[in-house]
Picture 1: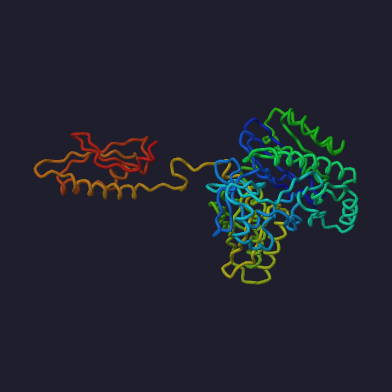
Picture 2 (picture 1 turned 45 degrees about the vertical axis):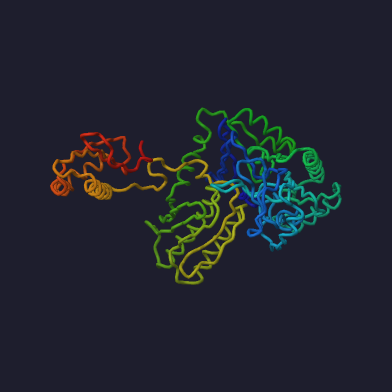
Length: 530
């Protein structure tokens, strides 16, 4: 998270923190525009980055994967190729050493080798790379890394590497010289993070000292603790911000909680006096997010339909593993050739999509339905613009060129649930469909069930008295438009129908009773009763 803070020194970046007992919200504002939003609930356990001593529960040779008990409701999932530590080359792609474990040639490990080294019931030390999402349990790996401010400790290796995101060669040479002189324990390697480019040697030494102390505590747990057991847990959201992202690019961090302010200043003071001076306590009367106009920005940003500067708009639809984005010209304000208009809207759209992916923290497969572009050069321009915009995203992304159908397809790494999933639940009335059946549809269903019930229950020599309970909306349809059909039903089946409106009934529910005995003849939608 907060990947955009890298390489944006010319812009004014502020981090606004709203710390409450049940929720901590963090907004990253760049020149007054909301660029990233993160939320964490202190009452809920955060496990991404945590290290566990677990027990192998079962081996699935067909999946080339195992399930590990780490003490949670659902067992953790681990690929066979992630069970043997030591493959750290992919860590150089990411500063925290955890984000791109999958980007490598996956060497197939024999089932016999895994069964020999990790039989069912064996202990294994793993780190969570992806939290539980939906019905899926957490994803883990045995390639462990512990992030500090300037370095990432990589146990069981001798690596002294530098993040590929530190691109300036002069800084890379300087960091490489410092790493060569920094003493490290045996079988422990390090990776220099992007922030290390301007750090002093004493900062490296301080980081190594803190990280090795943490690693020693983990080793004690590996030796003494009974599995399943949590050996290490990542700090809270606020502390991670200070540790990872209080760089020269950030003008200030504003916090509304006095306790969090004091704690953050102490953490920042360990970095430098100047860093501590950029921590501010908000004392205003208005809520901090209202004062900085973040609530309005957030409301606009997380809508299903998001407007573009030119008058076009994009529509986001989120499913469990797929994000569908539709691009439309809308009320485009520009003038000129049609192809130029389409290029302008598509360019704005992909830039906004890249921002929205960070804001919403969505992942999985993303399909963008662009406005059709006939010129290949325009397609290439939009593709390159999208790739450039995604460089600010710390989650792993993979983008394919625009297809012949005008679709731009990509994948984005999912580590935790999206902001939408964490803040909303399915509507209890429509069960997440977003729509309910119309009055006409319910009238048709009701008459269909009436015919079925009357055929089954009609009397030879007596008139059947039937009472129907429905939602008022459906009753209005029956009275105003379908009355003739109901009269015909009464004649055909020798019955007398009466209707009762029940506002508390779900619009898709109705019940049919024998009016004389009060016996229920038919009912539907019981699960939707209010």
